Length: 334
Image 1 (tube, rainbow, N blue to C red):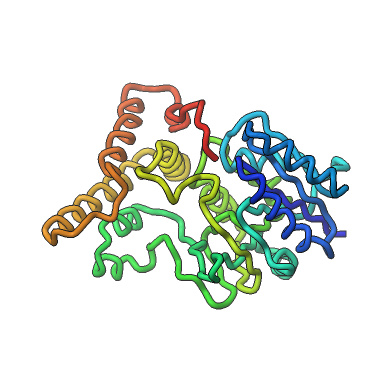
Image 2: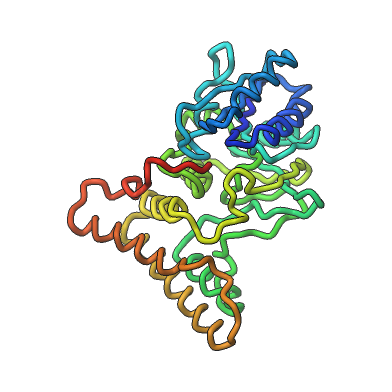
């Protein structure tokens, strides 16, 4: 019988996580499998609160696991995936659900049906919407030199020229294929994860899904967006992204690691140059128009210095050419 492991990652949002758990329990009630809640080293009583709730309700098919470190989104989900099922076996499918995402009763079942119907697919993602049913952007192309320039310059004629390279995809009204999907509600085949590996834990936050989907694509597997699988998502609760005054260092680290790992140093240099050129032209145009910049504070300057530091280390023969050495060990967000 097909078994599903649902993994919910908590970081300092116990009440929200319990709400997600309630929705997942309802969506899993006619399916074989278990739910694992991973507390990502919150150290705020989250683990104890969630564990007490599960024990009080005697939820025998729900486990609560405490990670010994906060390694970010990918590392936290890996803890749950590696734990497998409570009997020591692996599931057939892994379903990852954000702690601020709430699946409809049939949402998980519909993802399962899509994957069972086509063995060339390795992952299926839901239609994500907000509290007012507003659709969220969750489907994307893989980033490239062209997309870096297009995304930075923000100019209509350029976007039309590079229309097949724009990273964000329009929200489809029907089932659709995509290069990669945001990980708020995604089901994956366990056997493909066994083949390509789990999330790369060098990424603290951002680009980890992009990297995982790219590895699956290179192994010959596709992914599908299931329009009728509805999941309500609040978004950015545990990351605090909505309140960012400037882009955090781990975003620059993740972007750099993604490009270097998957495309090499030379391609990364071209991608960063394209972004800096496009961003500079955008700044010039907005200055001439006397309009405000819709860019995080000091973004281009930090991108330039961040990637230059890496390039200089590579030039002087640093042993580790991956950006992981630039990732601080004491990051405390997830």
